[in-house]
Image (cartoon, one colour):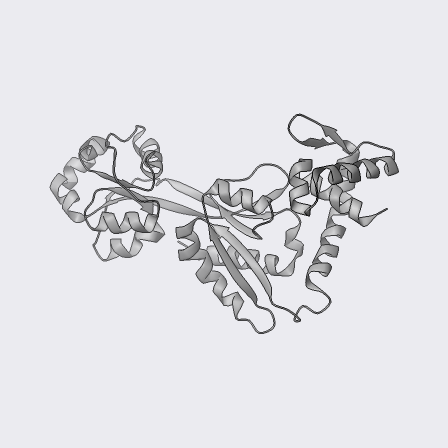
Amino acid sequence: MDLALLRTFVTVHRAGSFTRAAALLGLSQPAVTSQIRTLERQLGRPLFLRQARGVTPTTIGDELAHKAAPHLDALVEIAETGLDDESSLRSLHLAGPPEFTAERALPALTALTSEDGQGFALRASFGNAEEILEGLAAGHHDLAISTARPRGALLTATPLCDEEHVLIAAPRWADGIGAGVLRSKGAHALEDIPVVEVHESLPFVSRYWASVYDSRPAAPGTVIAPDLRAVLACTTAGAGLAVLPRYLCSTALERGHVVALHEPPVPPLRTYFLVVRTGTLAMSHIARAHEWLLRAASDWA
């Protein structure tokens, strides 16, 4: 059986469509279709059911993928790295949200770039969850950090860590309201404070209000800046209230530059996922970065 046909088959099985598999393999869609039909003729059984959107594997297709994929992944690793792992420096392409990747992931992975004979070159890209996962699926990245869990067999996600969200403002806003009023009135005490956010839809503040107050924020966004670090800077300067990950504002809280307006018993959380294309953990540099980030995340509070 032709290994090239098997590789195309496994890629289609993971991608769920001939079009996406063609992009990953660098082939035309007709070429992928032709290879799958050739393999089906050789086996005498259909491997996929064609649907309006993509394909679904038959029972035979699932069985073949389960048997063939691990061996093909191992062969790809040999082809990618060669017999001598020290002969060349591999590049790891990481994608993730800008703030978390810059503050957490990149500093953690930097240690792996300097290991003698075992290191790799690191390349980073930033984007939102949809952009990141699309880029990973298309083969532009090796490893992705996402706040959305992908669906389907093409991508494999592992929970990385949870981040706690904190409602903050400069001290003058809290002083102007008073701790007693904040405790007694809750969200109503905050209606006149301007909001600092990353988007007009107020994603962080709206999520916090829904979770903690079971309501929607009353004030519109006064300052909109598409970077959480800019949101923190504006909040520290007194522009209004904001909801930020605790890791990002912990230093400002410790120094008194901002204060937590509310400390709910169960704070809102957001989960980050570490995502790869299924099968690529057979590649040593991706597997090492994946394992390293999971270990590092156990120390992230």
